[in-house]
Amino acid sequence: MATKKKGTAGGLACKTPEPPPQANADLQALVNSIAAPMSQTSQMAQALNQDPQLVEDFLVEAREHLANIEARLLEIEQGAHTPETLNSAFRSFHTLKGLAGFLEYNVIQEVAHEVESLLDLARNDALQLNGPIVDVVLQSGDFLASCLRSIEVNKLKAEPPPMEDPAALLDRIRQAAATPQGLEGAADEDLEDRDTSLAMERPKAGGLEPSRESSTGSDAAQLEPAAGPKRSEASLVKIETGKLEYLVEMVGELMIAESMLHHNPDLGEARSPRVQRDLSQLARVTAEVQKTAMAMRMVPIGTLFRRMTRLVRDLARKSGKSAELELHGEDVELDRTIVEELADPLVHMLRNALDHGLESPADREAAGKPAAGKVRLKAAHQAGQIVIELSDDGRGLDRGRILAKAVQRGLVSADANLSDSDVYHLIFEPGFSTAEKVTDVSGRGVGMDVVRKHVSRLRGRIEIASALGQGTTFTLRVPLTLAIIDGLVTIVGGVRYIVPIFAVREMFRPTPERLFSVEGRGEMVLVRERLLPVVRLSRRLGIEAKSEDPCEGVMIVGESEDRQYCLLVDELAGKQEVVIKSLGPTFGEVRGVAGGAILGDGRVGLILDLATLFGGIEHAA
Image 1: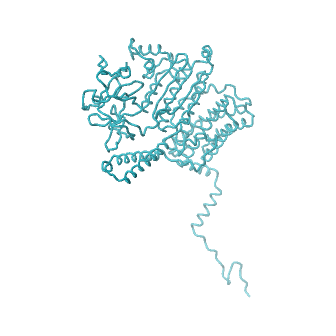
Image 2: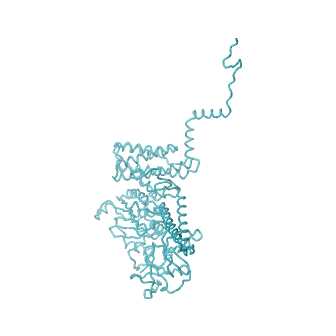
Image 3: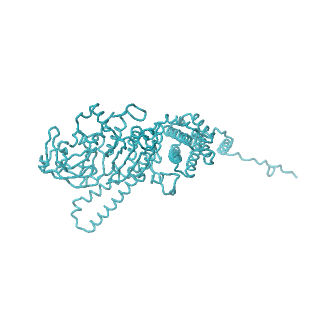
């Protein structure tokens, strides 16, 4: 009997089928991936850090952690902290290290790891967190922030972003970790290298501060990432600011449409109770939607105030002074655009207060004051506006010195009769400074000029109160939002103009005995025992008025830059809440006009810029 060979059937050899070519390719790819060298892992990470969405998410979270680190370290330095404060800063560095390692940002990972080790020693009571140690940690945060800026600038490029050499910083961190009692003054000299203008930078995308690139459904919930109870992640939705701005714009259009419908003469003649009820319901819903949309633009001003804490600390250390910053009203909310625009003015005013306002510790003690000066930032709601006060207990403004400098520069005549307020406002003139020498903090006469320009652009105003030897208070009044304003609708020659309510003090119809003509100063009107200049709106805008007799018109007492004037119009048409519309590049530079608005009857009304209209007129007597 013939035996069958192994692997045969019925005496015939059984052939193993060949795998298809694709199977071979897949098998080879699997083998290659298993045997791949570590360099390929690096290439995969490099591919990850070239993903724009991943990089953007990393920047968002990293900036949140850096903001938290700075806030916690300042609390520790000021002594107002708990063990959780240090743990929070430690966790932020630890998370930063992990995120940077995932995306192969080795420099960030290495610096974060070393600082994490330093803070771990402090957590275990093996290191004393004194001022120089805090300086080292804050300097590390600044270094990481500069790395993030490099990543953001280069995130759309194929090559990895260039970053500074961290060798010197790493040496200082390791030196601090090797000194159980902490460094003794070794970090003070590095304050000279820190550019305090960092506080002036616009908040970056996704950070704690408001941004143009991204925002959250509730900025307030992110103010203190590691302090207090956290809101559920599901209750926060990150959205692009562009989408939010478009929503607010459409809500404005909805308000205009509702107003036009309400003033429609055909519906006005309708006697149906149902139509009137439906119109009232539409008005109520529109008002609620508008209120909600505007609330979405609001952020607490504390996000801005807390950025100033680091600035005051560094400026005080740099100038050899001692200063404490007190914050009040951090929960007051206002438009995110205004928060961004207020950053520069506050930075310049704080630099001015630290350099010019506060005396040196020796001078303060000689004057009977505490060695540490006090700077106070306060925000509050007042009559539909946000009032921000910045005060110090320093030397105050020297009226005589300011006036002498103004006369020397030809800004005022030597025999000018100016009030204290008029003299104080001279410091806002371009290039004006009473500093004896120029420093890298102030003295060039630029800062306060920037303050006035920014506040004017926000349709706000500045008031100054000062007492020699006791201190100075700057009061900024700005609107809650730049999107919608309450306006007084006026008519001149058949054309409607809107005067912002926040600039209106009172209205009256003049009588002949209150009108005067003063040589060299033109028409004046007596208002509450004061002579105020009269501005005829028809002549300013080149329109034929209904009558040239002022007694047949209406005077509006307006205020601009702490000075009052009377605006003469033909008649008043009422008060209305209007949505501000830009006039575009063609008409955007027209003097005296700040924008336009669509009124209830569908016609366009121009919003007046009183600061420009009143510009160049002699101040009130």
